[in-house]
Length: 237
Image (cartoon, rainbow, N blue to C red; front, side, top):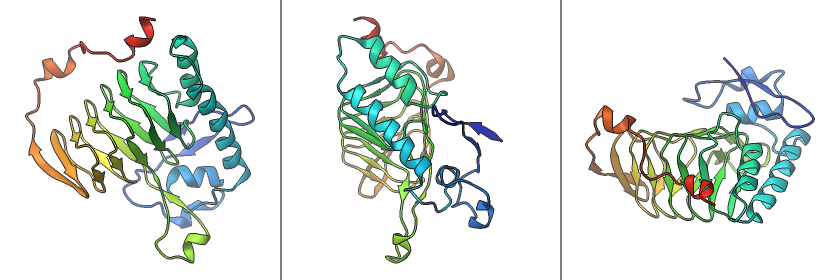
């Protein structure tokens, strides 16, 4: 499958996607750019000129977003539309200050809300479902490094993060590279999530573990229109 990513003004990137269950086979990297390697989880050089240019684009947009006024919601929406993946919903509310690595690897479902001071290192794709809530200071990482100190001097690599629908991540929690969270997962404040978890559980701790099973709502309830919609804060101004 070919995934067409958010294009820079100077180029358009087409990337062959993997299933990301394990690190991609380095033997498949022949002919790939460092940008493509980064997104596919193949060891790559983060100082490649194309990657550096992508980060510079991000710096500009993040500075603009964090300096924007809450009294000008259309401007904030415009910046996010340019920053995030084109597949991301436009019904997203993010409180400044916000940080990310690139933006174009970051996809939100509709009715997503992130509180102050969140950080997402989206070297690999980060896909977040609808009705998402993140408390202050939540961090989500996809970038990782070799544990061998000599190898660590030569390359970086990535693992994607996927978060299902109706998830709530408590303040100051950390989601580590390669984690998948199912639908309806609640993450306790300050937790460090180092592995994947299934639908409808409460997890907490460092490392996080299941502390409670949750009942799955009815399909009718799941598909009903949310009464609380963070993005309407923008519409109301």
